[in-house]
Image (tube, rainbow, N blue to C red):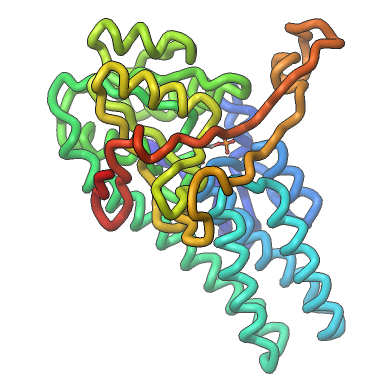
Length: 337
Ligand code: MRU
């Protein structure tokens, strides 16, 4: 199956990402060599998807630490801490970003007595561990979710929660990849996912490359597909799952969940435990990232599609209450609500 690493350290120890804003037309790799390129890549969704931004940030801390090794000790710690704080704020909804940075910060602080070179090595190891753990988690999510897929099942998915968004198979797409490998034939309806088209540009690209039967639909077609009996299951990813199971995911997820409940279709959230946030009690406490209005008024910031003076709202995520979610598929298994 053609799975690539969306985020990796290459053999020259450079932090390389696939520039997801260029897909599906071009497969371009970017070297995130300093804080500006890292912050810009996360902010502009060149690297995106909750686990992938956590992994990129973790490797980013290592790359920054390495570049600061010529500094005196005090500056090394204070500059790196400031960088971590700045990177953490780039995307506020996906908890994996602050989760991964907290792990890196812990390693940094544990090295107060060590040499800068030892600390840098420990940071590299921690980032690689985060990456490897995420790969194993995606396999476990695949194993728990694949049995829900039967011969002929119609699956609807939203946004992109595949290998581009994680270290390996993904979250919501991982069970699909495994079921496909097991020889099951099923069809995936892939929401285009306005405004940035992660479904059209990224999920359709991934699924087609894997040879999975894929049909692209506009977001506003989901209800009719359900009413026509084409959808048996909905699988989506998550950016933050609150303690009570309320789930923030890409804008549009909530209306899918409402539609699925109306038509009696099981609705599963697939997420690693790094996306579960024990400090958030319910969805009401989740901060929703607000993005540039031009993402809505202009197609890829070029051609205007709306009057220039129209007011715009552009929340990047919404929160689906746990009452609309059938179950959460994590590496631990399926937790039914
Ligand atoms: O704004 P994005 O593209 O980063 O949003 C991504 C999503 O909403 C995904 O569903 C989520 O991060 C899970 S990725 C495994």
